[in-house]
Image 1: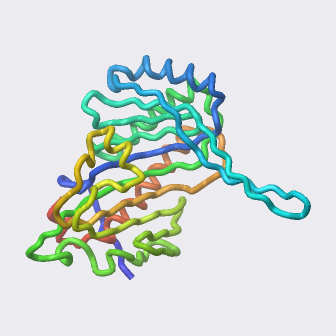
Image 2: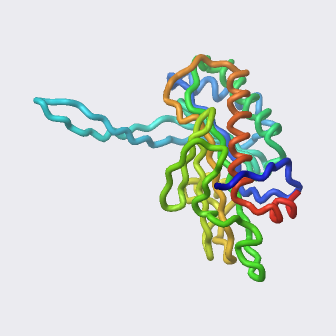
Image 3: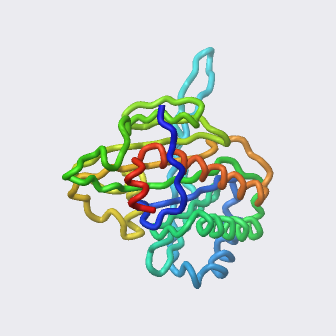
Length: 271
């Protein structure tokens, strides 16, 4: 069972894309539209790009009729707004139930957290967010494999399905490993690619808005996709300090997972 290597701030991190998200109790459409307009007036200097759209949701409903269960698939749409920085290195997406902030120019966790708390505080003031639910972080990393020394120089044995001693439980398949750990869960997706995009398919639309993943990578690389979130559907009263603490705890899980799949030599090269 692998014990993680402690990882401090790296001078050459392998990060491709990072994002943070907060889900909250649904906002009425009118409140959402008014709040977004007010928010844009505050952040326009830093995020001048704005694009309005619709997010499509699929909900599976079950109901009982004459002692039989019937499945109904309900398609809904909710308004969304996307803000981008002038160099496309930051993207903010807001809809009536969530805030997500993406960056390809990650400086530090503290910098990301400051931006997230600043935006959610502004949104709470302007839209009266009352409750939050799921909170999460996701870090997408790319490690180019040295063709002379091979995989062992960069990633640990068992890289595709590592057992991590600090986490309580594990289940996984198809290179997707799910670990239970306070304050939530850590999902680790690891893969080796000969050719392909450095960003997972589910994030390609956002990445391409940020001028990422426009062409496949031609060389061999390892992808390390770490998703740490509370997986909560319960609503708790909005509390900015609670949100701050939750993100900090989730970030500690990211560091453990990251330090469990790279070799000490690879971490030293990037320190």
